[in-house]
Image 1 (tube, rainbow, N blue to C red):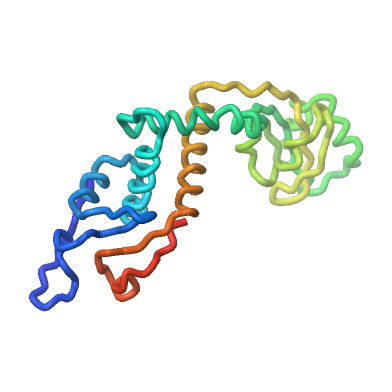
Image 2: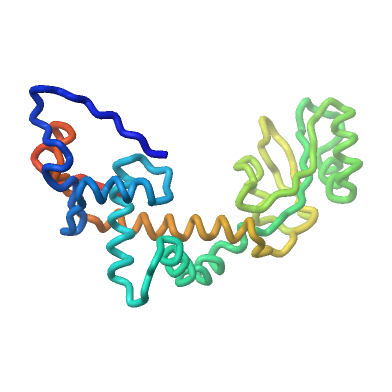
Length: 229
């Protein structure tokens, strides 16, 4: 729910919102009454100001469409559908699920590194148990590639069964045990939809020319252009 605080000052040079338009985006003005309607209806968590700009940009795009767009949801779906296949083709690898194992090399052990590497490659479970018994750390990880922490980044492109050096709060080694093909399930589709539409919004913001028509502070009192990217 949106809320507004009104400061009643007897001697103020700031005009009341209804006295003039609030905002101009790409030459199209937005009145105070329309702004309030858009803020209440536009489903976003952006800051109030960005909220207004985004609402203007979406409305302009809807007005300029070659198809009848009766709702924000319908327009959003059209934008996403037009870009979905290309986005998924470029990003599907990040949704691949990998199963990995890793173990630290500190505190130091008398076992040669080549033996530790061989043990992890041949029997990850036994290698991790042995590491823990020696006071070292080790664990299994199952994660989508896009969610792997930066300390495990070397595992993203490694082959199954190849032991690679890591740095997990100290020297470590890791191995990819299995890779599962990406699945376009509800969770993946939700991420895709949000990302695709936000990317589209960023493009619109970057190209927009915003000029404030309602004074809010000294920086905008003259109706200067405000960057919205």
